[in-house]
Image 1 (cartoon, rainbow, N blue to C red):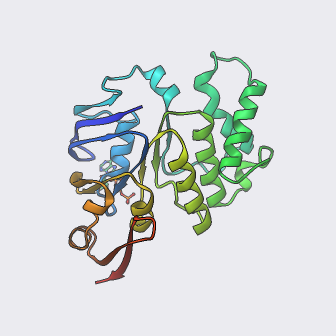
Image 2: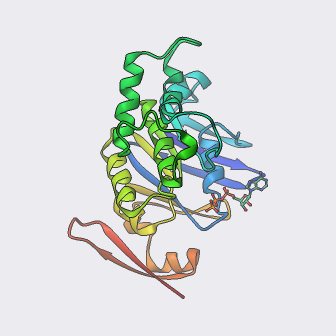
Length: 246
Ligand SMILES: Nc1ncnc2c1ncn2[C@@H]1O[C@H](COP(=O)(O)OP(=O)(O)OP(=O)(O)O)[C@@H](O)[C@H]1O
């Protein structure tokens, strides 16, 4: 499924004429704090409306209920004290696939188990959500989105709280799935390795978009983030970014 941001603009929080298209693979939204990544993701997810412009799926606006079935989101700030099990939380991802008020099925339970395995938490259904660490909660929130069987995934800092191994594992899993992912990321090196395309934002505007090799140049990184970057290419031909202060 293709997701298109077509000249999306908002007055508050500010977004200015944001256009890009995401197809299968990971599109990374990059930019400093306050550059508009979360605002853009919320707008793409239909949680906030653009003042002008449109969000299109396969070239057309999508009705709300169909959208909820095909597009899964993980935004920032998961709740703390919720009296639910991990299984309950991940089951929320199955709601758009069930008739209203109908009970969960064994097929739903299988989707939940598979999603938990994908985030390396197999068999965690009975753990209490409130007992989980920050990184475990983040992985459960991602499992909830995966259990939805989405064709488009919108993720706000999905690697937040994750240890290094699980950061790699998550991006590896996402890039091998037949889904369109748009993810806000802070780690430029990780983005360079896994994103098919990056959208670099500052102050609600797109500075550059395209493959990371063309967008993430040392000059642009210095201009946007105020840090020094050394850009090399690894054995697999992927750009690698080494950052230093100043
Ligand atoms: N409800 C709001 N009303 C007014 N301004 C807002 C509101 N929400 C966010 N902003 C402002 O809009 C700008 C963009 O915020 P946003 O959360 O989209 O940035 P971000 O790129 O996701 O940042 P971060 O990397 O810190 O998560 C920020 O300056 C923020 O303070």
